[in-house]
Length: 138
Image (cartoon, rainbow, N blue to C red):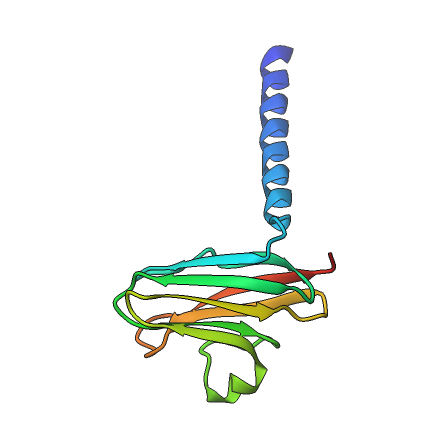
């Protein structure tokens, strides 16, 4: 009678452990100075990065969609949809024509913290995606 209970407890414990390890791994993205974004008709990927504070970041955006997209790194959070009133909070942005690729560089903020990222069709024909750039002290 004890064996089925023992197996059940082991199974539940193993599942819980795997869940916790996966959650920790998601919070610890690798620290990078290179951001490579792939845009398709339905999304921008990846949508989350960890970067060092006050460092130059190399950005490459490849747009495979049939419309232009804008990639926006916000200095302060905004609530989508992004509009002209939010322009003062833009830290860095880059527009990418349909089917094109662009490269750029920018320097991250000196202040550590979580910053909002917005990736949206430039003509507002689709839904914008919100992401996150976590700036950390190296």
